Length: 500
Image 1 (cartoon, helix red, strand yellow):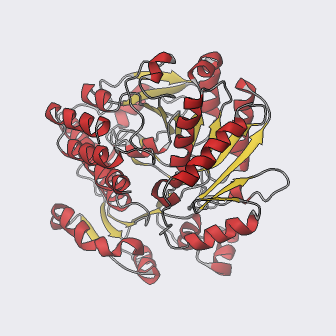
Image 2 (cartoon, one colour; image 1 turned 45 degrees about the vertical axis):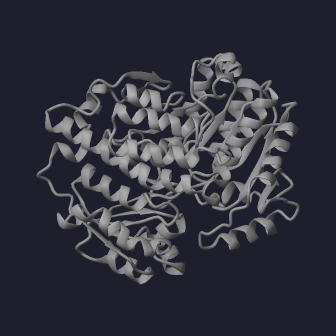
Image 3 (tube, one colour; image 1 turned 45 degrees about the horizontal axis):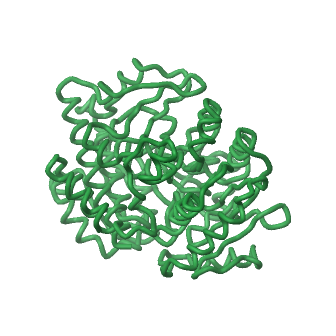
């Protein structure tokens, strides 16, 4: 748990600051942030940027991971290059003063959103802390003292009334929120019956622009294949990590597993997940409302399995579909089945995710190298049809969140009236205008099994997994590297991963 705090707090802040500083230097020297970045193409006439890793040091540290930013269909390189840099291209233009309503589940989110507002839009910000982090006010104040002294950042505590006062203040020109759809709608339309009336009339209470990241139900699609026992165990660790990292209090937490009813190893895989849920030490949910969400899951699924304080739920046509429509945000993992194998299964699973699940923030696809090779271009075609803002192939989509060079936000197309997982993107340290999504590719197996299975990666078992013994040491070492990147810090990072 200590390692999780390093990674989802100081590490991302330091990596983000370092990347934004590099981008600012490039623009100040007359260049573009996308100069020198390899481009490619994706189905539908999409331009892609190979945005992760950048440089040999990152390639060594994050070997086995590769991330791309996909642009919307028809957008060309010249258009992207002309706009890359966003607000840094017009430093004399003021974006006014914005309000950032910080999330309450990860310590990095609020401050990082302020940094992005400042650099991408030349906008000063008031950061209103979520009540769960009220005791960190002094730490944030010290950490960001230079920005506060420069009069481009303020940090405040407060309740709902404080938020209402700030959102309606005439001095605030823009609002950004990371939270729930209910909170977003209360701000935009107003609460209760008044809000519903305003929505029906198309007269929002909030008349200033708002951007948002609102979570959702994130699927984990498992393409059936012939896996070894070691593959079963490793991918079970992958799935369980997506659900119980940070006690399940993640907007990108994997919630429903989509499995093939035609997969002979389906039961073995679920048994491996059960074993892990029982084995990993319990961690008490701490986010406000978790007990209510757990009770809701138990009511909707009275036959749910209990494993070490976590719920495992089978969902089918005879049960409630709450697993598809409710972001439980706690220790609830579901699994459902679709028929088929190969490309047909993946096609149907993508359609299921797009049409049955709530939100469009992130999704993951788990597929063995042999099956990936058999699918060929049909894999990328399926990814193009998977309408999520972040997609992980053989890795958690949260790796897009962890990377300062990839974009983070819902798949575009949401509106104030039907906001889904939100509007707009953050992170995006290359300041690429209007990206469609980020796609991150990982390795199906760790070294050395990866080489035996046809993957040329030296990446060990992921230190992010909740089963990892190197989570704490690796995350702390990566944070120090991110603050001051250099070859001298690479050996320590490797040691911390391999010899915790």
